[in-house]
Amino acid sequence: MTPNWQSFGRLKVNTLKPLYPQYGTHRWPRQAEIAGTRENATTAWSIRHRYGPAADVDPARRVDVPTGFDSLWAAEDIEAVFDQDPQRVCILQGPMAVKHSTVKDQPIKEMLGDVNDSLIKRLLDSKYAGDASKVPTVDYLADRPTTVPSCSNVTVSKSGETTVYEFGTALPTASEWLETLAGPQLSWLRALVMSPTIVQGTAYIDNPMRRLLIPRPNQKVHVSASSVVIYGAARSFGEHKPEFKAVEITQSSSTNVISVTMYEDRQDSSVALPLLFQYTPSQGSNPIHEVSEGRNTRIKEFYWKLWYGDDSTMPGLDVSEVFEGPEVTIEAAAVEQFCAVVGNQSEAFKTARTDKITAPMDFAIVTGWQAIMKSIFPTSIRRSLHRRNHL
Image (cartoon, rainbow, N blue to C red; front, side):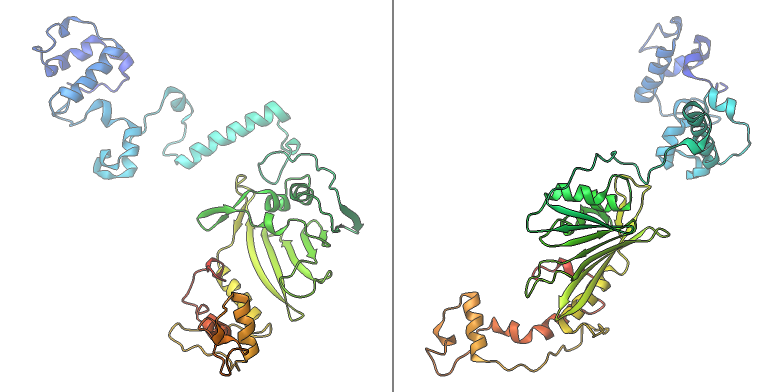
């Protein structure tokens, strides 16, 4: 039999007759008398594969018509391709594809590109009279920003191209303020502030910027087209400084890199913790990606300066080194204060109860913390310090 490369819808009874004996007349004695339709042909092929012999339809060519030339089947299973060669996957073209296939050996990239260009051209012609300059542009695809509500309890002023927002003791709600800060346009700032999640490595995490930028008492926020600077912040210890620069956010229009720098006041000296984000407007669902390269090193350098001196540089440490701290004099008053804070009421640690006061084992953390904490700074320890439990 000569294979007939045509669709099952065109198979006729004369084409199927040579195949009938293979299905066994003892099972279906009237098969040679029944005219074949497309449904009959499809059923016959399925029965042949389910119950028929293992031999191919055409022993000379060793080709099984219904599966050997099914391009989707071959594309999904490399074992189905001749010699397991991806270049030999047979692609069956429909009549419309054949009509427009005018170039020999055209790469699939060009084919799909032509389809894409054709769709764009038709859309331009139907909606914008073929004029691409009339097409509206946005930074990234997202929900249209709602009308920015009037933000209560905020004083707004202008200084050149910069808008200054000042908070008092009464604050607006976080949602009102973040919507105001994000602005009415789809931009890098709106993506940074309003995205519910960001991409960190291979994971999606809750956007930390939304926690960082919530309103706080007596802050000033300076907003321009390429930056946000926040002055004044609540400190964990010491006087609150209204003019202290707490956060600075800048965006580079050439690289779309967003730099978010947080500052900590260390003995009247500012220590910076920079984090970098890549603004990727082509990915509308997650346009903000944190830059992982160098992230752990930047965090380590911040904590080194915070703990060991803002003018010191983090050395290259090895895990096999012996870490030493400064010499410490243990005073009875310090031990008593420590025990009072942690709730240790043992009389062995009170000067009123004993002449020779001792220190609890927990106090070793107080005296040796500098040497202990150096053990997390070796370059071979790559995990982020922010993931440490008690940091």
